[in-house]
Image (cartoon, rainbow over all chains, first blue to last red; front, top):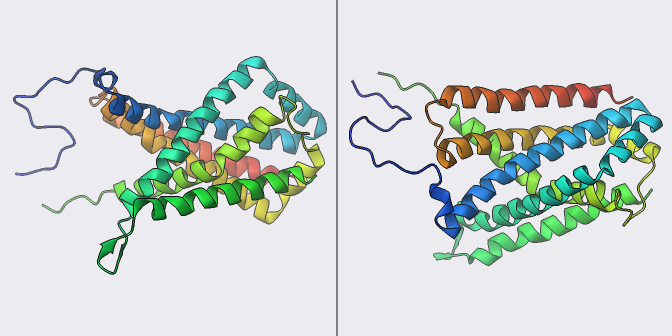
Length: 135
Length: 118
């Protein structure tokens, strides 16, 4: 009986090193892109702490702000910011590959599909910053 | 034999939606709250200003989307990082449970915290 398994069939198998992704730049980029998700999750946790502190009142919130000024937290946020930017850029650049749009029998150039993502990114970021900073 | 229906498309959809949120919204939040305000590059908004933004119905929905979808994005990507990257394939069920389970617990916690905003 044929059954789908997530594992390759038994028998001859080429052994791949656990560190296969260190050999080539493109592989390393792939793993770094995948690892960016850890930093995304870490910032969601920070935001949950922030929501908790906001709900706790002004003194709880100033404790949270103090926590964010800790050099270790700042360093982790610098690294997280770089990873999140890497995620954003690779995500936008993937969109032309995920969406093959054809107009008049010709494929729409990749830049025309990726471009609007960047425009939306700038506009949304500016809108969010305006809402937060307007005081 | 009837194929078992896979929930992969649904999980992929959450991953993808979370990827969009993480790309469009997380950088500006991280830059402002994680770097610009703590380092004094920009004046930090007062507690009551942020509370007013967070407690409005739209603010709550925004925060819910902001927290929940990227958690499932993390779960899916991290699961495959362990699967393909480190080739931890024999612990597949455990990894799945920890990733999607962790994201579900995080999402429930987010719902609770956002619900509780006074």
